[in-house]
Image (cartoon, rainbow, N blue to C red; front, side):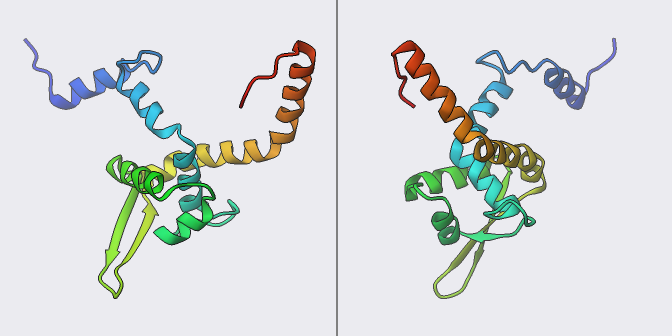
Length: 146
């Protein structure tokens, strides 16, 4: 009887992931990374506010100013979640006052390209989607909120 190593078991489970199933770990991962603040944070840390630069560390206050509308609580929770998932690292520099910066990791960069693409797509197609929504609302007489 052949023994199965832990790595082989993990590889087999990974091949069986199905994000359409609520109990699947990949489904739960998609829930975590699909939020707008996750996308915007990874986009900012991976290429800056205009999506043309490269990855660079950013301080909490800089991220807070860049992400208009994010509450302090939501920014903190999202950064902690990204740090826990290994997508962002947090560095504390013992200065007066203490300096905290966040930087995207290699794993985060692998996700960053898709997130940046979504941001760019949204910026390019917002007017078209709004026109489609207006046409739908007029045709159906039933505007949907959103």
